[in-house]
Image (cartoon, rainbow, N blue to C red):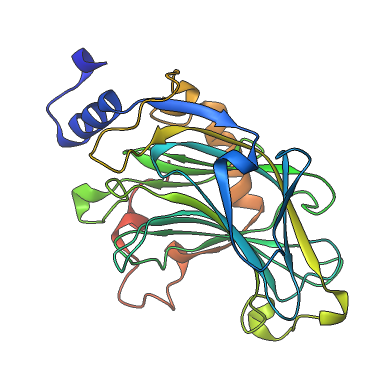
Length: 291
């Protein structure tokens, strides 16, 4: 790979980082890969480590986090969301570093009344600043079966995918002064919690505690990613494998068509078009080509 690197800052960064990091692919064992971090036994791992559940009741929600930190790669997780009347609940699944200038890449699933669709809320935080929301309806019922939600995180871009269909691309726009998450390793987090002050119709619909406990399920976690060693900018060497298809620099033509399809028919909010929110002009990354 080194011979293909140019002395342009972006290409140099990608080459230096990707050449120095060792990628590992593993998954399927929640005992091995995750810690239940809060919820007083409302989070459970069962089926020999192959299945995890989080629950929410009037007293508390619950959550877990990965044992490892990652710096670039692809993360896949299958989720089956809270069924029935999930209004007021939020199931969050995201990558995040720590501290006041943290980076974060978010999936949040906003519950709704029975029969009404979930809202998939996405956001990207860089150096502690978010406000880059895009929201979508899904083209299926996410409570009936498991579906795969993925993040591809590279020095060049972040891609959000649902069942391997790209729904959002956030490109590195450092050349025009927009910070990009590229130096802080992140853990994987998930939580199920009550947010009925804002989650459903702006807080107008409250959580119906008579329907509690609310439960979401997780399986088939796969990390094809760099594992951070905690000692330096290199990665811990465990099982060396090819980083695989996620290394592709851009979406191919079918991927771009699928992205346009999702954004045309299923996107319901885009911060880049919210002129009331940004009367002085939308953020600079919104003025660049989306993909």
